[in-house]
Length: 252
Image (cartoon, rainbow, N blue to C red):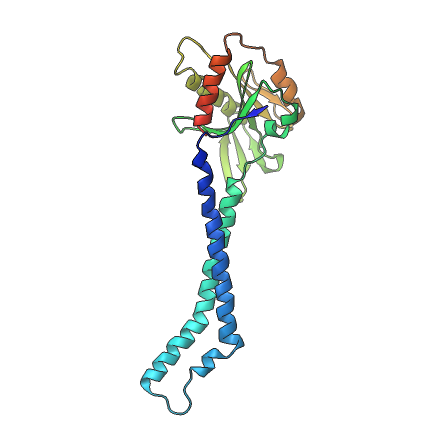
């Protein structure tokens, strides 16, 4: 199975941003620790307190030094921790999430290609997973975790997301069907004489969900057999397949 990746060779460069953020955060935390040690561990500030009767300028210098000594380590530490948290969050977001087909890559024929997080040209949607094969193309999406589903309506579902908030989403099978139609329209834009067949499937194990006439509902173990059952599209030759793969790669 071919995994479609972005053509932009410079795409790795933005990854240096989170690394720089982590380095800066670690340096700030280290400086805060060192400053705290100098202030509280060595009695450095005590040396700045003049013996006997101090002048006004000495009092001002001493107050500024004590203020910096008390506030500086905490401020640097908080900024450093915030930088570390931001860097870790960016790295976590940049990790490629294992999608259903990628988990089964060993069982997918070499004649198939898969891409994840394909952004449609109009920016209306990001397709979670798109498989291209002899049959044309297939949009593969997943159900929300069963524990996160609060209600299942005929047109919309209520789910709880990671931050604990409740969101209303379109029915997953309806959404996958519309995504397949969007992809079909996109692929046909440059070749009006040819229509690429685009199928839709939602992967899940929720027994309360049933397949529809426009979208398959399959378990993770059924992905391979379902893709193999799709009839080959004779008009989808190698040239058209390469054109579609170029379009998808450019959209990543």
